Amino acid sequence: MYRIGIIGDGYTAAELLRLMLVHRVFNPVYISSTENIGTRVDELYPQLYGRSDLACEPTEIEVIKQKCDAVFLALPHGLSVPMVKQLTAAGIKCVDLGADFRLKDAEIYKKYYGLTHEAPEMLVDAVYGIPELYRDKIKSCDVVANPGCFPTSAILPMAPLLRKGLIEPTGIIVDSKSGVSGAGRTPKDSNNFCNVNESIKAYGVGNHRHTPEIAQELSFAAGEKVQMLFTPHLVPMNRGILSTIYSHLRPGVAREDVRAALEAQYNKEYFVNILPEGTFPQTKSVYGSNFVQIGVHTDEEGNVILVSAIDNLCKGASGQAIQNMNLMLGVEETEGLTFAGVNP
Image 1 (spheres, helix red, strand yellow):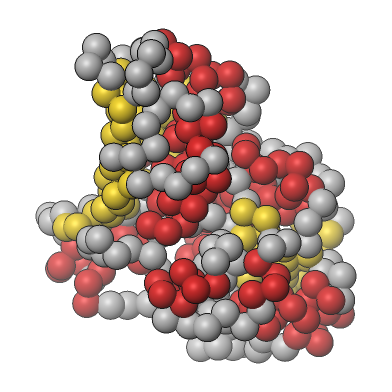
Image 2: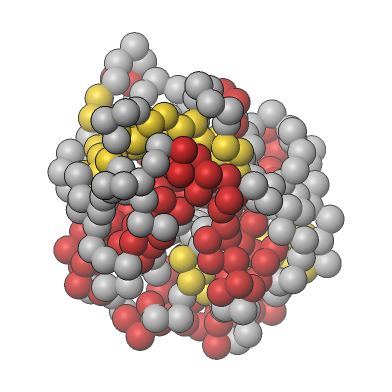
């Protein structure tokens, strides 16, 4: 058994605990908080009632070093870096669910997050945590930058096509819809029931923080700078992301090459499903799971439309984090993630 710590007590922390209820190797022994110290997690999240007796503790690095073999950091951006430096120095594997290690350029991080990165030298070795694309690197690293939820939904469908040079690296449009849990647990006017129910809105238009993350990974896949636009939308549901992605075939590329490339990349991947011709995903189909469903459409004019669905709290956050930690610790990659589970 591995002793697992969670730093933070938000929705992603609760999802980590939910998933580890049936994990045969990970034993959650520690969870920290700033506002709920002493409160049992099954009081914060009643779906865990009778399934976890953990209570929130203060965040004390020396305690974590003594109690834990590996740690998930589920914190707002800017808070993970100093903790990860100390924990990895003590030989503790870390998966950061925040944004502190996702962007390789510290100046871009400063531009979008308004903070000077405290350890830019660590960005080189931190591995971006999409297992289907970076599995071998994840297995041998100490720090995984768990991807954002929107980037996961966009990068997985697009990366194989850009790697093979099938689509133009310019004019890409990513249009995404997300459930309200993506805004986090902290109450805000923008995500209260009266404002969200029976409404849909675009936000972060032209400047959302996930834009450079998507562009970075798509550019890595293409081997050149990718030009793309990303717009997220908030929809009145609890969880889930549906992304519709528009691009264009390069001259001489056959329509059928798109589906062939996706199937070649993912036909052996447990968590990625390429749907049959003419079938497109919906968020309900992946609710509470670590699966990704991708639908494909191409036309005679060379337009490519990809539609992906993920659960933003699972494959978009905590499920993918466990998938990454499984790889880091030499555990079967699907452990704890293949079941229907308790009610999310």
